[in-house]
Length: 277
Length: 205
Image 1 (tube, one colour):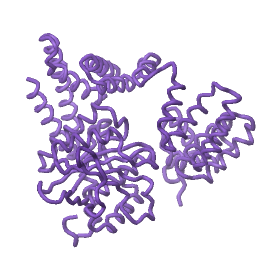
Image 2: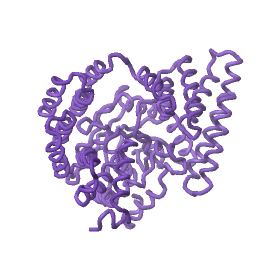
Image 3: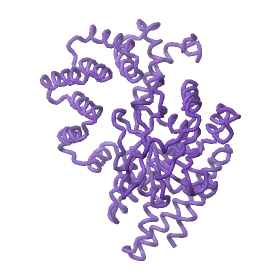
Image 4: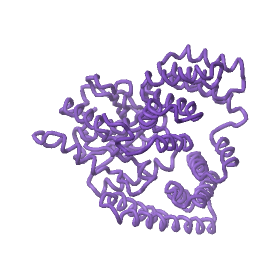
């Protein structure tokens, strides 16, 4: 079988850089990471310098994701040799046990870490993952609440995330979705504001655009709002609808396929406008 | 209650949707192009989400858009499918029940279909699905004998073959469409591929 470097005509440096990009972007494209990483490790480990350790970790986790226990074990053993007392490596051992569904043993690993270092959040999170995997949702929630005791519920978490990451349009948009889901006029107005904010941060965020359209439309249709609020929200909704139509027209130009979705959106916007007026 | 028939196209797309996002909860809508009375023939499905299933705005949006598309194409929404992220648990979540309830408001014989991740292995002989119907305002397990998959072996073979070829990468769900609106959530390309693989002698598959 052809190697990655043969198939894609890339050198080891490009493969290493690709792995780095995927690490930085937190991608979970495990099959790709295994393909590229396995080759990089087996053919070029000596050239990687100190990067080799973080690559072993990255490939190991991806290998677990793809049921490649052989590869995961190889990576783990290298890491154990190099960092014999490391909590970080111990956590990786735990993750491997989780992948093999040996949950009790995995838990022992994490408890050992927490005994040594009670503030180790990575180990705490793994314990919660085990509960989730076992379907013990009530317990997972209890542990999660303890872990998040300063944070409270989802909306509050997102608020913290937004404060520390003010430019991240995704958190903003997710927060808006949570507020919309919670419902009620006040939450709807908040959701509209945050959809708008998400759009300011990234004017191509379609979810935010649709969200703005829907929240503004619902507010405008509510019998509880003043005439001014109704008028303002109809303006926001109308603006959003124009942007949506424009985006879909642009999308429809290249491909035949998106015509179906485009027509569906057009009709949907028309029908929603009729119910609003 | 009545019989439910699941077409090859609907099953294969649900299956590929689950395979495309093995670590996420996924959901979608079941459609029928058949007439309203008699057995419910699920002829197609629209994959919807692979993230934040319980959040309202995008679900609402998707339901509305699919509804509109259905009226343009003489189809109707007859059910809902979901696969949970946790493979060992295939029970319907509150979100699944809520959406299924909404669908049954518009269609009496709506079905709620859960994909059983634990049974999706290559060697499993039976369809990895659990089907519920609405009786006395609750969603209860449907009698297995009222659930039909014609040409099941062929359907299973097609699904397996497409998975081997990596065809699940061609599948577009509503979530992916919102990330790139040039992508087609009606999956015309995939439908053609499935039709090609299905044997021509079987006609309406």
